[in-house]
Length: 148
Image (tube, rainbow, N blue to C red; front, side, top):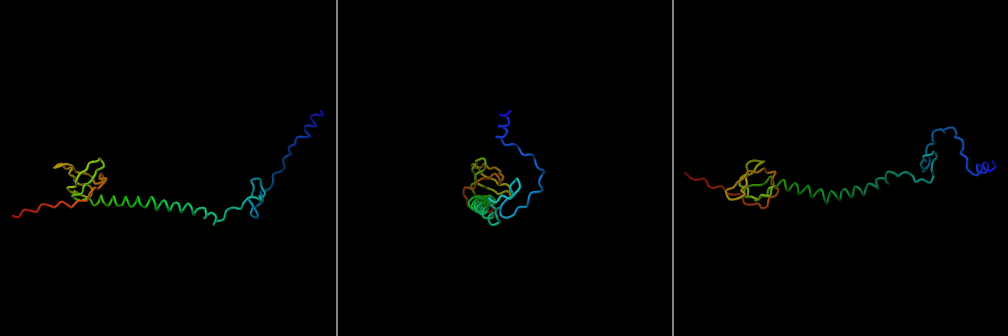
């Protein structure tokens, strides 16, 4: 028995549980509340509003650079492509989405054009399928009306 009592004396014994404490105290000073309860004086203070805004400024700067270098040029290019498609007229050489190259012979309406892909071979084509306007030609002149 002597060995057991010596061993128990050397090991720390658990303390009996105490009654539950009241609500943790409200934080005071610049410390933060530790999960266990009292204020930890060595913890850093929470960030202030100017410090948080200072962290957001680099994000906004990067977003601005991306807008200037990527988004604006792409939008401008899309606007130019749309305007060139709307302004296709007779005599323009165009490339279709299928890779066919031809010369516009007639603008049927706002959605369709007629292109000549070989001598005397004309096809009707939707403007949306035109991918590129290769060269702007002079409009084909109408034949003068015969005088009677």
